[in-house]
Image (cartoon, rainbow, N blue to C red; front, side, top):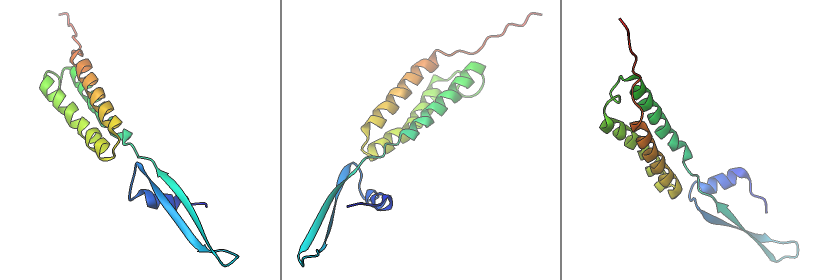
Length: 129
């Protein structure tokens, strides 16, 4: 039994991370009934794209800290707040899609970024007069 990609996509709209059972029955050439059963695995769609929010937040914070300007240049609390806010989509959508590995990776990346960003200091330029 062949199932089209459109049919599998339609089945996947209702459930993920499980399997769907498709049963087709009808008369055969001898007057009896023929039944065909197909089990279709429905893989989860992990929202890995949400990790880009954490990366973008880390880049913004790093640039502000490096330049020594902006709201994140001297405030670790604000920087950690932005990282925490950027982590929310990975945690919520990862949990909702039942792919907890996205949740764990998102939290780990944000934590590592927070520690690394604390080590970035502003460029000090000396001007001789």
